[in-house]
Image (cartoon, rainbow, N blue to C red; front, side, top):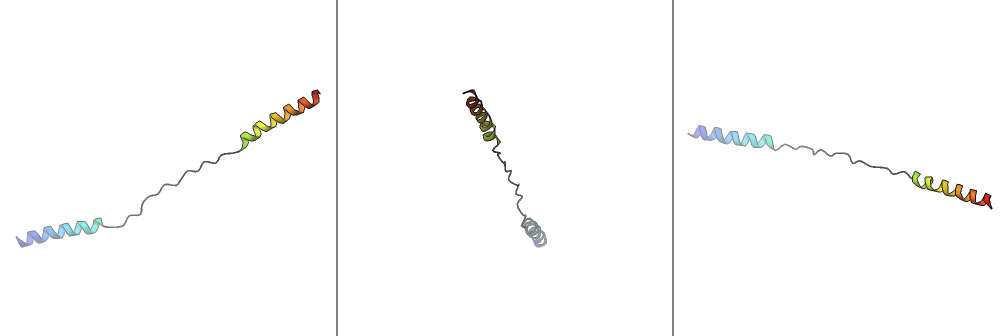
Length: 58
C-alpha cells in the first residue's frame, strides 16, 4: 500500500514539475495606418485655378 501511495505521489509531483515551465507570450505587431495629406492639395489647386480664371475675366 505504501508503494502505491508513493507511486501516486511521484506521478503528481512529476506532472507539476513539467507544467511549471516558462512560456514567452506571443505579441502581435501593431498595425500603423499612415494618412497622406493629398486631399488638401486636391482642394487648393482648383481654388487657385478658379481665382486665376476670375482674375483673367476682369
